[in-house]
Image 1 (tube, helix red, strand yellow):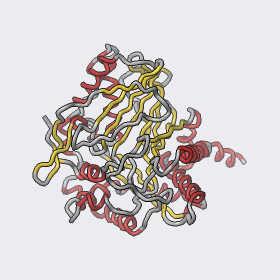
Image 2 (tube, helix red, strand yellow):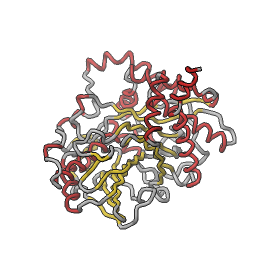
Image 3 (cartoon, helix red, strand yellow):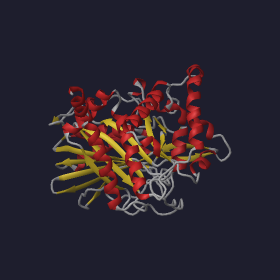
Image 4 (cartoon, helix red, strand yellow):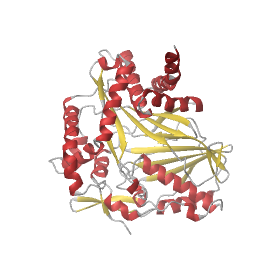
Length: 452
């Protein structure tokens, strides 16, 4: 039994950053054509949960430390009779001090099924959620007799003991210090520059209610040709698709502030999660193996989209080359031991980021299940589409998540309905989607210019 386990610095940070008015909860919604056998889905849920200890754990205090311990009640599938809609079902936040940090909700209507997976970010990141999701679907197919039980990938719960260390031995850490000096300069700029919120507003009291209709979201999709065009355009331009998404997000937020703010100046900042998993983590159960970087730009940096893209590409390439994704998680280790610790860090009154952009890449494309026109088949249900939602912090009222499923780019906006109206949210996600579509056509534009 791998539990109990002390919390890692990142887990402690997510726990400290959690508050009733701004829950640190993540969501995945899977939309299926067809229905699930209820008994088989319950059995699959039990199998999948047993493979991911942190998703069936609660936080308990012992002495001066917090520990993960097994929850009294393991997570189970909840069923709603509410018809599925464009937005996710309204769900109460998860509190890992009281219950396990995982909830799976099934909603059936007219031959369709939505599965919504809700996880507290202290338990795991988006990639961990995807690993659990794959296990649940493969387990369901196994219970139904469609695949053998051995189809589940081998996991090693003992690897959870090393989470948060990222394979850094004392020798590796010392060799990395010169590179991390660059990261410390970035941390200094982070502290000296104050990010502007997307819309001027005041944050809610920590103990206030969640936003109405939580979690409020909207989703858009690119067709297959547009999705392929985005990858091709990035290759033609010598950048990554993620670079294009970051550039387009900056331009979208800048245009929004220019239309809505009285004085649209100052710094715009994005929170961009960075996956820290390596091949050594291929058997790691659901956990947090992620960090964050915080690129920021001023209004004058937005005037030339190509120059902005070049600067984003240089910055993101430097982050990868020097492993600067580690800077934030290493700083959490230090902060945890300072007076006030992580609580003081997360209760800062200024805006930490204008928006969030998380890119999960291609998802569920290597499951040991059958596919129908590129879409995953689980029993009698075919997975049509997926949405992902990242959590929101005070004064950060918009989080955009991007993933690729069945060859199509899915874009989801999680927004604070206390700040943005439904009309505002539609305009914001439509503006961003339009820019991504424009970027997807860049390959053709470049080809025409070369032809001339």
